[in-house]
Image (cartoon, rainbow, N blue to C red; front, side):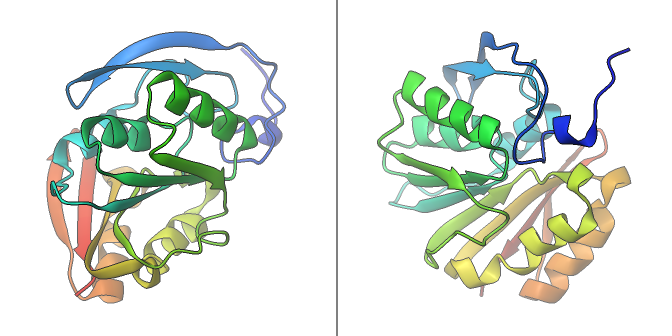
Length: 206
């Protein structure tokens, strides 16, 4: 069994895990996408079930929209959305510098680098815009409840009226408490989808 320290985990800024890049493809939202992943990032071998379930449930209008992907990892959510909707502008953030570099390479490899802005931010610390129409997140639950709660509780101030926060969480990893926090923060919450213990939760900034 491999012995990993806390600094190897995907939610740290600089994972110490030795590089072992992988190149592979996966179909998301009707497009065959090419990805580069590595040790020290979340779900390095394939697109995780939570991300796939979120993308299937997410509703995006055809009009011009601005999307923020919080905790983007190597980029599957933001890149898949940018590829499907050519009118979208997508900002993608993470604390993991290795993941961010991969996300930039993956955006270029899939021809959406002009639609995407990818930068380092712990939750919303470096997020300047307040006019996103959608904030989406597969939050880093292993980083702790405080991080997940911050992603939820501070989302409202970065959304336009009518904008939405959509997140994916497993029931056993805090989906019920996240649902309550979204209800208290936004005054509304709905379950877009449940699948194999994963909840897709949506709140609207009214």
